[in-house]
Length: 110
Image 1 (cartoon, rainbow, N blue to C red):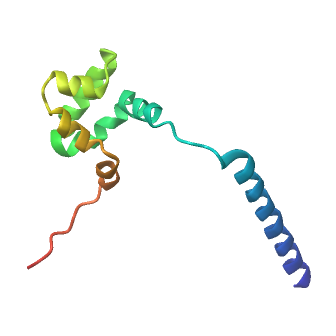
Image 2 (image 1 turned 90 degrees about the horizontal axis):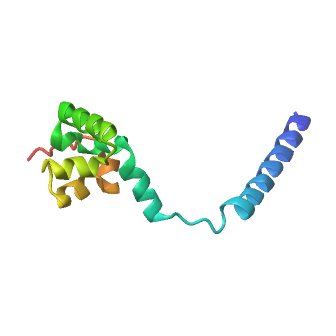
Image 3 (image 1 turned 135 degrees about the horizontal axis):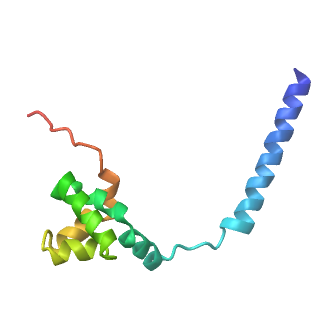
C-alpha cells in the first residue's frame, strides 16, 4: 500500500507540472477571433439545426441542400427566400438560442 500511495502522489505531481506547462506555453495569451468564428459558423450547413424550431425539418433540409449546391450560406438562402427576417435569423443562431436547443421548457402549473 505505501508503494501505491507513493506512485499515486508522484503521478499527481507529474500531472500538475504538465498542466502548468500546458497552461504557460499553449493556453495563456490565446484569444478567440470572433469574426473568424462567426464566418465559420455561417458557412457551415450545421447552422440550419438552429432554425429547426422556426422552419421545420423538411424546409431546413431543403435549405441546407440548396445552400450547398448553390455555394451560398444558410443566411443567404433564408433571407433571399424571405423565410425569416434578419433579426429573426440572428435571434435563432445566437449562442444563447443554440445552447437551449433540445431542451424543452417545462410549463409551470398555476
